[in-house]
Length: 613
View: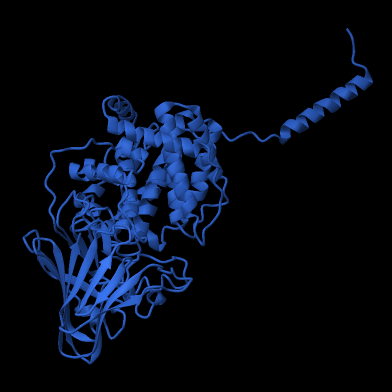
């Protein structure tokens, strides 16, 4: 038998030691988490993926329905087109805008929805690859900017959707990357912040943060059940604080523009609970939710421009929120889904993947829409119109409510008017959220020094050339609607408490719904100037005798005739609305004004506005 020589033995020993040393340095990968038995609140959670909003049987239904429904086919093609665009975009980077990562979170969210849907619908690997790369990129961020927690909520939502919808085709390694990202940057941050203000806020932060948590925690229910067991029931309870503000008529007090943000997230959370647990945990039963899907439709003009109160962006218009379709289905109201289809067509917008999953075909057997509407609640609104489905119809909205709520302006009694396709009286909307003191509200708050937020830019009376009282409230005390000459009267006494013992504004649609009459009445308690103002982006020609003509530069055949009915002898003037940076400049805007100095006693200012073509 042969033997190993000494040099060979030495080489063999050294080689063996080297190999042992090499393998000892290799870290054994952690085993993939195994699903655990779900108990307690999670006992009825769907075991498999997808469990969040997307359902396999619904996907198959859509594929079949597409063959005979050209509108659905159009929506699907739009989603695939969006996915093609996102598939070639550079990966996202952690770049803040001011204190916010929100734009990056929102971009990840829409990419996740479009790419994940496109892959599930077509099985084309390019969508899977692009989705995974985008999801892994944000999971590699140092954090999701928890100092502005909306950023975390939206990012967690986006990663959870991709994880859940793509789960069966993700590699084990990629599942772990996404799972760890959701835990580290999302769910662990929620656990640390259970006492922060937004948990039980009344505003949109509540729906966004709590619904984002619901979606994220349910995505990991079978591997990391503690998050869902502990956090989701609290999130459902927390939502009740905000949901009370939809009562009684569905109006969202932060304005129609913020309605989309708050209500979309509520729908995400409700839909995730429905598909994961089989029910919405009673969220759908809150007063006002049955009606809320109609609010953006009613608060939008014939050309889909919003009654732009609160911190809405300038010239905000009704969007094609997929929430319309979810609410239409939940409450069996085709008027809501019909409006979604109407907006998509009229504004040439692209459908969201959830509009495909929640799709309902247009329905011709719907109830008639009323011309006038009164919304009660924390903020109150009355709208008038001369007709539906006429882009040239007259439309006016006026708001009451509170000056001291989130995103509010000092604008009680503000009205906006549209006719002939022209917005004649407008609200400029929000300014830059990063302005110093923008969120310092209350009496004497820095917020009220900014032109777009104070009374001087709004279509409201001014007494003593001062802002309205910062904490004032105003309710409608008379509403005679849906008749030949509808009207509504708003009690503004609290807004002008320092100058008047009684203040009201009455708006009427007169002359067979062809003109508006605005009547302001005051019982003054001191000698003061009384002013009437209206913001416009149209040219103004002032004429003697208390008259003015507004002309639109684009639709040259349209004009608005404005006339002082009372007091006799009052004349119009024009004032600039232009401001200096860093505030928005308001270029091209001006104010049609009436100024009545040294007024005492009972004062009535009546203005008639008549659109002409």
